[in-house]
Image (cartoon, rainbow, N blue to C red; front, side, top):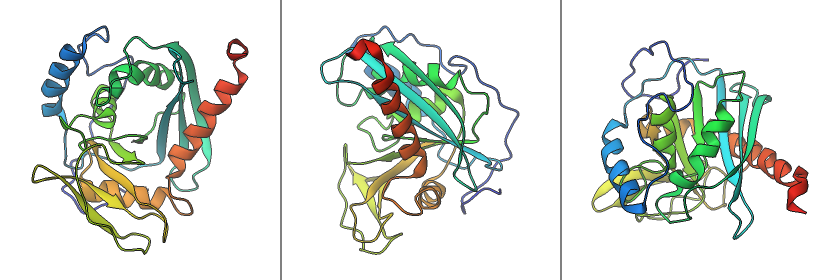
Length: 246
């Protein structure tokens, strides 16, 4: 399957990932230290296409019981053409960072990265259930994940974190710019006619137009892309199977 989009394209290099190959920071940090890390790493996000043929696409999701420090993370890899599940990885892990809006990656990403390490099929593209550039410091969880793995990554969120937009048209594929402080940080995208939009933003190594086109391709029937739906189902099944929740 060829790259989807009209943005400048750079041929991919040979990639490989293990535990946080592109990061050199600890997760045991204060909120102030986390803010500094975000401000530093946001400069490493690539907003131009550096993406090769996409045969496998992954979705990631994290779930937890309200008030519980235990996180359940799952990554599901789909065939990019058929959208059938071809691999999955999941973990149960204790959170080491509190829930603080705007710092979600410091709480959830260690578990997500551990789930990625369990995959046998490496994805060519990742869709994160959260924001990328559409973030107060332009470094949401989709950016953090993409930079960590140095893989093309898209942020697709269910609600707005920062920014404003006009209402997109009612038809599938209609979109409106998401703007914060005069900067376009994403798009409100209608993936299903007459249904609330999703919020698409650059994570890493894709431009916004390419991100939008992939989300539409991955959401042929429902509001959310199939990557997110599959990861959500997997992580909830993991929670339900855990005998320690009872």
